[in-house]
Length: 226
Length: 226
DNA sequence: CGTGCGCTTGACTTTTTTCAATAAAGGTGG
DNA sequence: CCACCTTTATTGAAAAAAGTCAAGCGCACG
Image 1 (spheres, each protein chain N blue to C red):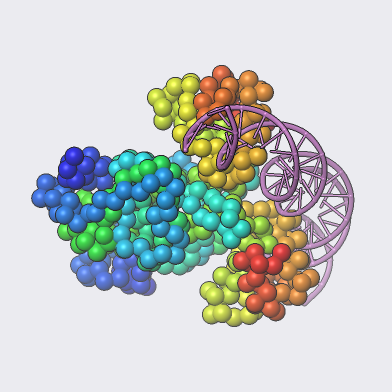
Image 2 (spheres, rainbow over the protein chains, first blue to last red; image 1 turned 45 degrees about the horizontal axis):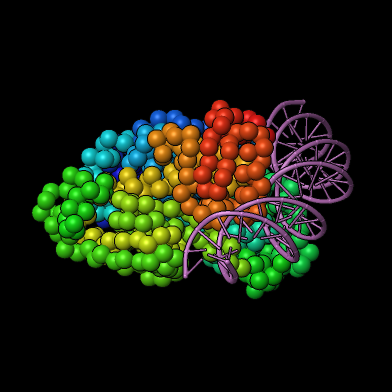
């Protein structure tokens, strides 16, 4: 598939006139990464941002002792690492592939040029950053105001939504990674899962989860049930 | 002072041609709020964003049980609550004055119009959102990967920077509010302060803090010293 | 000068982390 | 396709960090 056709699928570029799409196609660089590959590290100079074509990317903060907190996981169609394009010049976090992935790299200066000539693109990017702020604010809320079982219940319900409201859902990421996303340890996550299963809210086998009592799970997520 | 002169001082509007500045002046609304006044609540429809002229504003998330996590505190010159202007239509958090405050309200549709005609303004707003993402990512990092004394030490050093690197600094906000900002309880904050004082890193009397051992405080902030 | 709110302190509980050992799962090469 | 080996997940027990409850103190404000 040609780059320009891929670009036409990206929400950010929806409605971009074909000649500008062509321009984008000429400045982007396609890059592939194997699973577990570091894409950039916090503090690296950010000369552009990325768009996921295939695969899955985690963006995370690392503590000196090696513990990590995932800020976000990105899948196909999603742009990430835009922050250094617009403010500062260094990446505020690190990024790594969770699977073999194919990315487009969009160089900073060329993209800024384009945005200056196209207000719709600017508004599209503003919408993306605004949504990201919403998500990060929700993560802060989770970490500061909710306990692990609440966060886990919320994540399961969210995944269920993502998967067409199915009651049988897949965790999508390894449990260790989920622990890093929920801001806890694998041990605590494991115990939280067991607790939900004991309470007959879910049935769990490996990365496959079946929601047995959606109402009850929602109550846990909201803190109405301990 | 006239609105247009106030606007000219706001970083976001730096470099805006005078006629567009005039346009902004015509669409903004000046509003004053007493201390402790709720400006908007999470979930309210956001018809525009605000700019602080005077005073201090906290933006926060509230748990059902009343606990709160402050996401950010804004002072003069800073815009806030831009998220619903660009994505979704509801505020993702609540906002309240910490002091008597004077704000400018910038209505959404008029501002979007303006931004469509002015790429520099769009880039300015992108830079603001990008910086905010950086700050929120740092807050997530603090909450997930650092203990309370580390966060407190980092806050004290940050305040010292803000106050021209002075060793004698003011907390700027009430301790109860600082606890909500650092993601902890007043009790735990109190104990953390006493611990730093016991270790002769700071001397504290009320909201006045004197840094006695900056190096040591930095070590605490980085987790090199327990 | 009193009153009240915010801050501090102590005692206790809960949640989560950490350490260690075991069990299960997944990938690789024979 | 199976056996092995490495990685990942689970479980138990103990420790640490922070939260909660309750009481006392003190400063600021009326």
